[in-house]
Amino acid sequence: MSPVRALFRTQSMAGRSAVLLAGCTCMVAALLLSGAGAACLLSALALVVALVCVSGCGIPGSPSHVCVLVLGDLGRSPRMTYHALSLVRNGFSVTLAGFRETEPHKDVVDHPKIRIHRLSDFRVLKVGPRVLRYVLKVTVQAFQLFWELLKIDPPSFILLQNPPGLPAIAVTWFFCLLRRCQLIIDWHNYGYTIMGLTNGPSHPIVRVAKWYEKIFGRLSNHNFCVTNAMKEDLLHNWKIKSITLYDKPASIFQETAVELQHQLFMKLAVDYAAFKARSECTESHIERSAFTEKNLTTGAVTYREGRPALLISSTSWTEDEDFSVLLSALQDYDASITNGFKLPCLVCAITGKGPLKEYYCKLIAELQLKNIQICTPWLEAEDYPVLLGSADLGVCLHKSSSGLDLPMKVVDMFGCYLPVCAVTFKCLHELVKHNENGLIFEDSKELAAQLKMLFMDFARNSSRLKQFRKNLHESKQMRWDESWDQTVLPIFRDNCKT
Image (cartoon, rainbow, N blue to C red; front, side):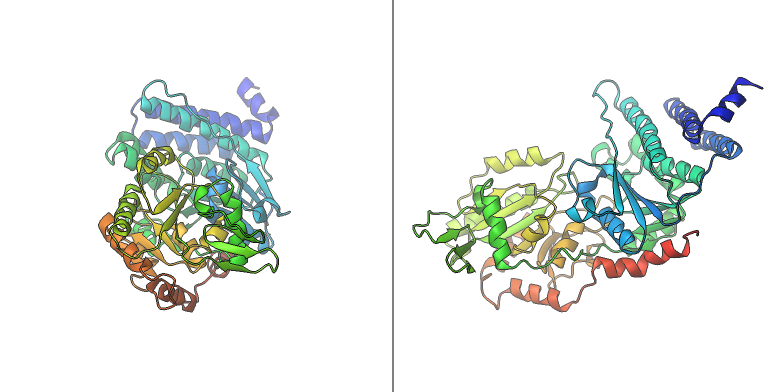
């Protein structure tokens, strides 16, 4: 018997799979570096598939077990955690796999039928040519991801978020082939368009990423996407059939009672001066924040007279959101108050984490605003919906890199019946209805004019803000659970092998 054949006879499934993946990854990496074309790459993958089939190492998973996979931070992937909660609510068990840089909501962390499998993020040293570093990172991530997938209980489905899809789509497809399970891709956007923001649309890496998403995206068993515009684009340009699953607010997003608002404001005031009362209270039985006051004797909480308005925006601090637009509009608003316009002072809270946060924080620090306070808190998962439900107006600066996805932050704001001003892009009309549930703007001047118009009489019941909020209440928007049960649950139930 040959040594190679003996090796395959004695190796476990994990060992055989790792050997095959190593050969596949090295072959693909070598072909990429040598400039090989798509035909060579597909030939290499076909060879590996043949070896897998010959090895006969597939083991089907439990029909009720689903792996929900994110090659990103679970704490900043709410849609995928919603998937996990919906699955366990309908009798499935879930392995939620991803990076754990920030904590998901406690409902996810504490659920007995959700097992969180932590992935490690490989960071390449910034040495050598950029293309070579990127190929190295993708190669190492492919090994890591495949090895981690081998550790989990065999699933019947893998529900994968895209982006990021490189190398996740290829690796999970390969794994599904071995495990005889089904791959479902949830298309939030296109990865290649996000890469194009920093590298340019004609960069070789971007072109390879586009080809990769197109080819491997077709190998999935089922697909979901976030807009009808994306559904049409996937079908027309990539021949991928998908089902539109709009982002919908979870039940945790509601208007916040004033008592709970006060608790959160006092908590935030410990670290952020914007939430502190502007002056010391001389009455010992009164506890004050910038917005509310509580009578410690009776327990009654009320809004403070002449309180500032609370403006909120959430972001991942990436290139697809230009926060200089908001900062310029706030400067205009501040100057209007200085010049005598009767407008309330503002507290602007910008939440989130991301690569450009430090850059924008420096810009904010350089502003000399007299009537506006800006803070950039990172909130616990349980506090974020409470703050949204306490705000007077939301601002969204998300511009889709593809023009085909919608900002989930606006969905969450609408779940709290919070009106929104949102920067315009191609398919935004699928979510924001101008002059109904908010306003759409094109530049900082238009945003500044909208802020001044909306806050001119924001405390009155007849204000435009109150009318937008009333419209949101009357719209009877569908929540995530109802939408998921109608759209996604049939896919899992109809394809669940008993």
